[in-house]
View 1 (cartoon, rainbow, N blue to C red):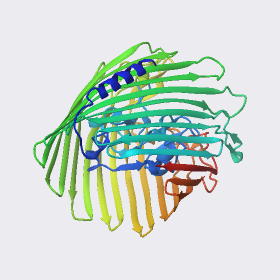
View 2 (cartoon, helix red, strand yellow):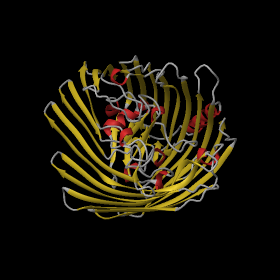
View 3 (cartoon, one colour):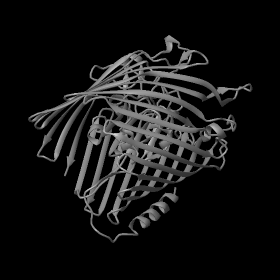
Length: 608
């Protein structure tokens, strides 16, 4: 992956090229500038680093306990995928600093190969978003954000945690910023023997160890009062040993490396805001069907991307937004039949935002993608919000979204299908937002219809191949109650959410696998002076594991609770203790791969 270093040097040169101008005011910058607009209309759960540190095992655990997403995890720290509103992992977009990073090969993201502490902020957005975020943004999107700030001086964070199963997690982050320059660097290391046992199931998590490392470098420079250049780079590598149920089974492992680098030039004036981005992404994976033998399969992909986001504000009520993007994907597989393939893709989108009065907000968008050899639909979105009074507002979202076939869908041999069409979804949701005192309540019923869903099925020759076969209907309710209040030296905060999901294959009239009809999650925090206590709970209803609704194979309902206690010492130090799975629940999110029973961890956090 030597090209990644060439891009880093080139981006760094471009970044420092214009160091020379005047001073500016305090600013905090998030690369994904569209999220601010989305928050007016769609429910977006924002998780700060303080929230992430409550579930430091991995990204899967954070989303399981702190979001409406269902997580399907093949054992702790192993392959893991999300499901929004009854959709699949391929219908979820992973967005790194405003850029879709779903795998070129698989068309989805593996959450446990995305370093949790490599980001400053995590945002979880339910509902369609293909007009802005592209292919896969059907059920929802997960936004991995890095933040750069000015006028903050020197700041350093050190975090170290040790837990059951010889699990070690560490983070070192340092930043410096004045009124013109901002630099942030961080490193994260995670490792675990992961050898937990479930005696009641006669299960030992053999060969389940994992470790990964992440390095992040971000920088920003204000050229003048209107022009700022930003740069963000991430390097990640990880190793997962996939668990086996017996020593007689062949032990396998999976290596992954990724490199991401992004440069953004932002221009801001009274009437115009423009963000021009250039990015390079590289991913490499290797699978070993026996840990002591050479790799049995693998692949490497590169993505070159340019994107321009132009906003023109006609007045305080009316604004126009135009987004153009070009992307070149290149890939080569090993033992997969994927030989030096590439795909050119581009898109143009236009959005109109109209705020005729304080109580009304509207947004309408249209987009056309142009993808080499793939037919794509014209997409649209419409959102409207009305503040009925000071305690109730209503929001309507309607959109058409899509997912284009992945390289595996098209080129895998044997089985790849070059005649595949894009999946297309139509959806609507109606958000009802209530506010009374320190309470906030959101109730959002939704409906999604997906056509031409891509599934891998055996063909007439007995070879598994992808085809456009199913139409899927999903409807349900997302609800969440939040409360926050300070009482002198005491602070109390809690959040509880309930989700009902009904997702059905219209061809077979049966429910989709791994879509629980009921999920409840809750988080509560109480702090007094230098002590903080938090509790987390999560309930999942009965979950089918196959498309034939076979009850004997279903995952039974379960309830899991965690707790933590933190002590602030000498202003800059915090010592923490956690108990995971307090009630020793035996549970799994993927059939035959149970997750750990009660386990413990202790940590130290230093900020100065």
